[in-house]
Length: 433
Image (cartoon, rainbow, N blue to C red; front, side, top):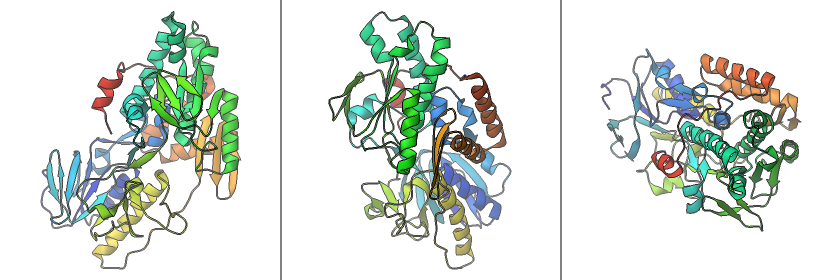
């Protein structure tokens, strides 16, 4: 990897998401390690706002941050654009498509990937949204289907083109369906006067008995009410069994003909090959870690963020796979690595829950904060402030704030661009997670 030798201990960080990037920032400031940050993309993605890229509210570069900016002009800090293929723990070596690297300490922060629960037809034919290219694919598909609906004379074909089905009513599914509903209500009447918006339907499917299962029941009730007011059709206790590219089959009597089926029903860990099988929790596909984020069976290998499963009394299934645990673990591990150098006792990680939130649309959001639940404009304002605060980079905050202000005043979405025509099998095979 062309990393110079150093008298300082080498820490390799695999993954530039919330966990890896926050860890790298803290370690670089200490100037006590040689830090090598590795990612298969050269940018950090602010995943909570991917749905806004897919629905034309934001351009992709407003939620992306160059990882090399994290290490620019910093001594003993390096970024490498690489796909790590395996780990040799015995020889403290990682292997990648650009070469190998010997480390003193290894931190795995590879995050999560879409979970299809073994359903191959859904994986092959549905859309999913974990990366910026995938969000852009969804944006192109939505706009292309609207263009086709405006010219087709085939009623059945038009019905499929104007039928939008989202599986999974977690925060991503709720936010995405609400955003598509706002496109239908505010954009299509102006951009596509020859499309009858009464023919456009948005279906949100959830296998459990309420939307937003991770949040409080009160938040779920408010969110479902907001969705229905926007015209989203919510189908609870409905699980997807198959999708062939045109027909979604479920466990109920309901089937949906659609050209746009988006899968947001779950995620799973994204581990790297090479560590003992006992270190990975099978169902979650995440590394089992102790309270210091050390992977089970290894003293000098750590996991943080979505890929780490740290069980406790309060979190028997591990911490939620969202940004805050990743950010906090990254910062905490930096302190513990410094303690290792000083031969001090490590401190256990304690997660501080700052609340859970989801936005459904303009002036519509829900927030669970401690034991309180907020809904409506106030919750929407909190959601907007928090997401602006945690966006990486001053430029991204300014651009996003400007876009949100413009959208709010004009009921508009400025990024309605088909940059690259979307072809399902050609594009998706090139962009597998």
